[in-house]
Length: 549
Image (cartoon, rainbow, N blue to C red; front, side):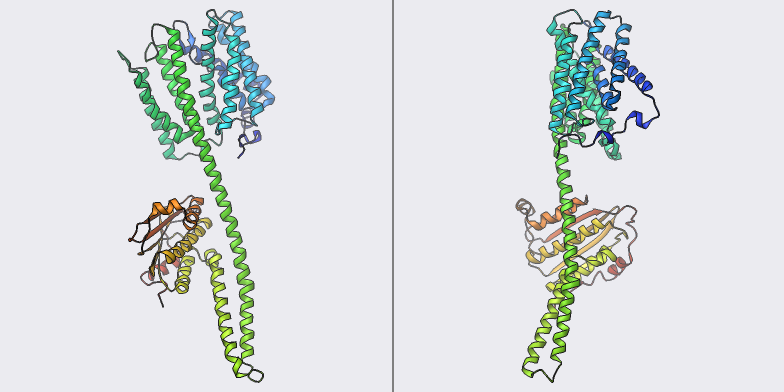
């Protein structure tokens, strides 16, 4: 899989394409947002040195630039810098100081935008380690490193101290704010397609994180235990494992807000007699809280992408296999079976010609004709196993019932089939999956169970169709079978997984085996209405489809 972002810039709709808004109004909006971001950075300054622990201005401006076409960057960058200038003048910075700050911001933004523009073909998606490394190189390391080197000259004091505080304030913003904005602006982000349960889980995480953050950073403590900070680790793990880099970035933003706000008001663990030391401790805490969990989240997302690619590849292979099965079944039924039937008829015609056929050869010809008919029947059964026409025209219940009947006769075993409340409309992929699982499960049961009686049950429940294939044979150790990874079990598992179903096995030595597969029902189907062939199945549910001869 390419580690560049998955979607081209043309896929991303921009503000100018969604709304009838002019570039001038967009530039004004960027200037306003930049001013507010600078104001927020001023609010987050820690007294008495008024040093900002996190400077969101450049991070938010870069986020906005990445979401619009490059052709208007030349307009929006000056507009954003103008917002910074207005804030500097409003708080009384001398023109020389403001000029150095703007120069530092401009250098930083240009380096980051050029680097990200070269490294990513569109809006960065930080869902792979390579993408995260490229983003970190330009947005977290090189850009802030060079930009703050210029900005450190803007205020009096020890240069290395100023540079260190400025660098971490910019790096933290690009490590947290920009990924959060980009992930929320992405039309492919998880929140855009999340379920109600997932959104409730996000809300629970944010509420819990807010409560713990308030306790740690706002509550009045005589002596704050340093170990209390470790209570944030479970929530960051929750965010990383369940919601990826998007969840981690938003969680870190929440933690940063509470920790900085607490330090501004003289509360929390990051206060003390040396304010510069406290600011550095706060910044290091945020960096080492954000970096490892962001890395963990990206690793989780990358593995999830690999799993999805593997599942899609498996689905395609199964689809190609079914297509080839259908072709072979058609050849067997329409060609081989017909030629065998014609050969049988010719032999029968020859055996009836009493004038030209000796009695000694008539009996062998009858025997050959009988064998020819048996071969034709076996080929026809093989054709039906490769591709069931009943599945296409009569539905899943009729197809499985017919297969159980033919399989029982062929293997000389008893297969009892029942169907209850099976929906009329089941997806083609789901029906085919259940049919193949039935075939594979019965073949394995006959081969390994050492019994002659089997049960197959098909039922509808809610938005699922459930298949059970069971026997009372010798059973087996499921863990050992999964470790060995037999082809039959792997094939069934992959088929069910390809249609987003559930597959599991209940078995133990001496207690028989039950194979259960559940697949989603097609949209618009009703699980409560049974089809006519299901009713026929239920009427004969107590009678085996075929019995041992």
